[in-house]
Image 1: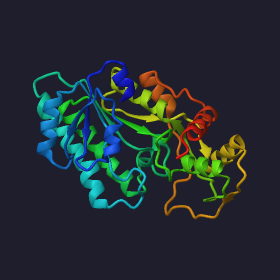
Image 2 (image 1 turned 45 degrees about the horizontal axis):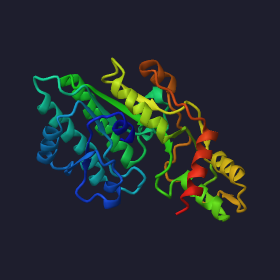
Image 3 (image 1 turned 135 degrees about the vertical axis):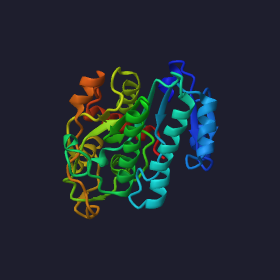
Image 4 (image 1 turned 135 degrees about the horizontal axis):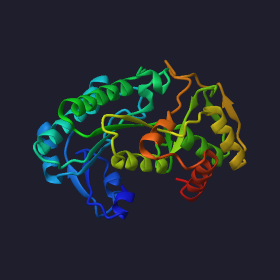
Length: 292
């Protein structure tokens, strides 16, 4: 959002009625807030009419880092909310060429245990609700020619992440000199910086001819969770021990997720530019500067 604001874009941000005040306050001052609940189709229609958007980025969701999210809530907000937004955009743009692109945000976990080229196989509630949202987006592109594209970020990391996720938790523990209990750490993920994901979303919004497509946002390279923690330990001269195997894997844990980054580059010209070592170094510097 800050990149858009710096570029002079006229930005509206949808804010949930119960959104934390500190998150709302963190929005750039030139961003106009529209308070509405995605579950209320009337409120969504009013927000779309007021913003009259040319490009829409849809990131609102529940359960992103909560494997225990209530399935009814995930379905209503993630799938139903997406449906409400798509329908409101369709109604608003009927007979007009107002909206140039609608970028829906999915998740790499929609693939489950499959490779990206093999189709979708969600293994948790959040991922399943995102598959449903993707299906509605695909349908609105086919049935109504709405210019929808879906991006699927892989293992995103960067300042501001929830503290219980792997990299922030490992960095805080390393800097505190404490032991770090973790799973055996053999699961491999495609780690990508937040800045690279933002650039990928902007590319998805502007690249010609990608309507109807789903684009992976990742580096195309996998790294194990254990290796990530070991790198953080080496870079920070951590004194604590890495207790690999102290925690069990999550039920149904997917052991290998890597993006089809080459396809996204072919379609949009975008690729991830930050190397893992540089990204981890930047994260360590940020946490040293803002330790709490």
